[in-house]
Image 1: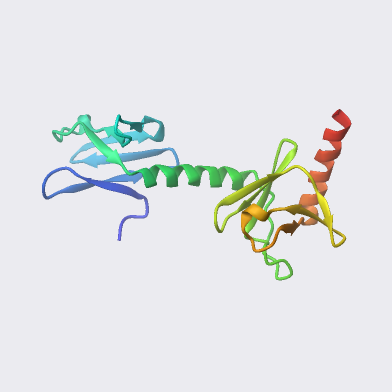
Image 2 (image 1 turned 180 degrees about the horizontal axis):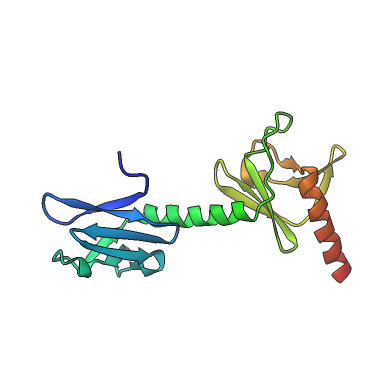
Length: 171
């Protein structure tokens, strides 16, 4: 079991490892003895072999670099994207009548509606509303919800329709 903010560990000697710990979505640090270095994700650079490396020479360990696992980089990037999505979303409370509520987030992206499936982390962008069985719906086949169309809740359909009408008037 690691710490809640543990990102990865690496060997500093034959018998000893140290941890990289997350400070936030964009920074992490490594501390050895009384030396602590803070890194930003933008400082992680790929080397000629495609490994992601950081400069740890200020720690005085005799090593110049440490490898950051690719899955850590991908996880942090996806987490930042998810948080940005959630911050700009129109959240829908879970509803026993709508099994998809709570699984998906909706948010407006200019003149499009972006729908994010938080279960499998897939997303789709739509720019039209269709009428299916007398209800306003959008095609979300690529979200893998088990059905092709998703009924839009009124708190999403209304603002999205206004945006589509404004776009139509501009053209």
